[in-house]
Length: 391
Image (cartoon, rainbow, N blue to C red; front, side, top):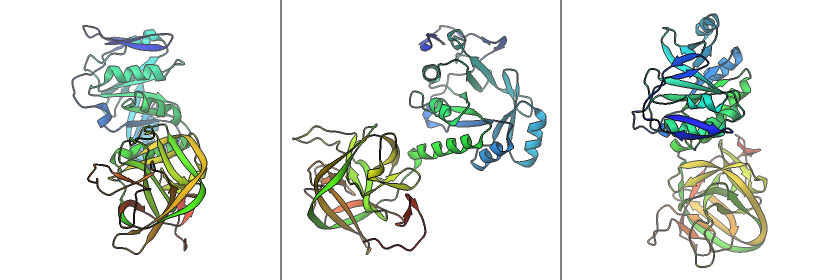
């Protein structure tokens, strides 16, 4: 399989027989296809390439212990102070401590060099791609397409955390990993924060049943519609509440109605003063959201993912005050929402109609809804331990 491009835009071409790649005078065979495992199912690989001991320390503290060295002396020195997995670069090849070749480096600065990368042979477990040209995104996407369903690891050299994200998100599933070649520990911190925000597939929030105790029409207020750059499915929404200690799961407008088209990217979330859950266990006021910020989308089972805010609309609309008490507890939580049929709260279980949410216009005392309990005291959206009374 070869990859070629015109003006940097790459396409995939299937060849009938394997070849040996030749890059910068170095001949090698690149392993690959034979496994049915999906690349998106495996954990992303991170190797760190640095000569800065602070970067090494920051990486080890965040769980990354594989380092690339051009000097065996430096690798030996660092191995004596921290438990790391040292790898050594020799030309366009990478060896471990036992001098076994475990990877090859392909320097790609032209379409012709990109053509030579192919997943047909089986001599090395890893291929490292060092993109030297101006194009990165399209060639990376074609590498992902070419190597999908193949065993082994394809990594790209990244010189900062932002560049790393490009490679990790190419064609959604991304490359298998990256080599972060940096001398600034801030890039280590930013990359770890990125992984923490994106680790939603295995993350689950504890949601609690609460019983509606009050439904009251209260008048006009400035409410916020949050339009995301992602689609939401039935049963998904945003965590919003008047108090951070108890936030309601407000459903998206993905459900069909007789009066208005479905808008699966939108949550009519509540008034400007309300809290909304964002990544990192933090909250923002709805009034603080703007294009480019991130929120967490949560489903009926507590599974969550991050989403980017595309647009925020603030308009004056009639509001309803809803209060609910935790089942089996004394805590009362409240939320204001627009008085409209398209605004709904997510319920613990599907109703007889198969719907997972109840419109606020149909809510009545005694109905059950889902809330997220958490610490109430906040400073700039961060939970803190202090005495606080909210009412």
